[in-house]
Image (cartoon, rainbow, N blue to C red; front, side):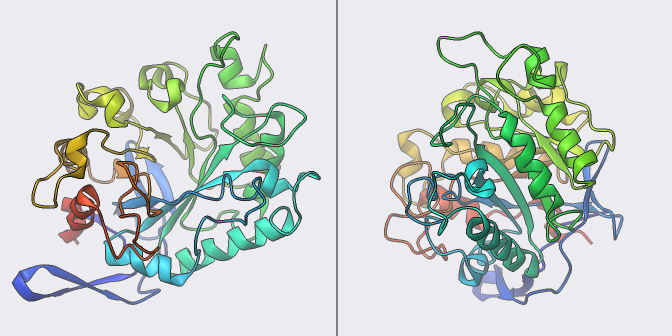
Length: 364
């Protein structure tokens, strides 16, 4: 039995027979996600969970630039706007130095201020029954501050995850997921990530995934669902399948970033099969990348249609999180530059995603 758990959407029939969302927080609790085979399940109801997600950037970079914590509002109006699109899951990128409170950062935007602001926004989303994916996006393996994407986890990432996973508002909290790292990639002018480095931090300056798992499971005693990313900017699922990290609880899934410029001539369904045969997959970033994405809403973007069609074939296994909710120009936004953070002005592929309802939505 599959359901799309959306605490905020009570579907009524509008003009033309289309579903019209009515906002009603806490109709149901956020699902207590856990993995059963390649399915996402709610531990409380023992039902499959179907997610329609969205990413919202800012938490990874605003703090280190001294400009704030989020790139725009992070409040109930944002969550209500997402809910009006049928969205029930939110991905929030984070910065380890901002959370931990690096001494070179403005304390108005880092340390306790950063932690409190993040947790408050997570609480708002959970109040509406959302799933929230906390993504460690920017790390730092030098003596400076995390001001961009490093190739992988840093030694401080272990402190970050012990702190995040141990936070009383996040530890074992239904609806909270930990994406342990954003996009592993091979460093320039240095040796590539080896399996030993990727898994255990051996022979490199990075920490490994198994160490991050221990920070969550052992140090913080947290059982939240965790996500693992592939190498090659989180695209090479064959690598992930061959070197899948160890989670003693088995409460884990894959993350993947199949942007069109990488996946245009391939089938997402075929590429991902090596993972989806065994694990759920959170597509925590994706976007079309070619001019047809700018067509009017009456001309559907082909890649967007293909990705959503793939997800429809595997409900409760594939969860989509487009990049990105923030208003802006170009294909990597779902809203127009003059939109607000409630999503009032979707662009062409944003219209497609807004109109899409995973097929399991109507199953009870």
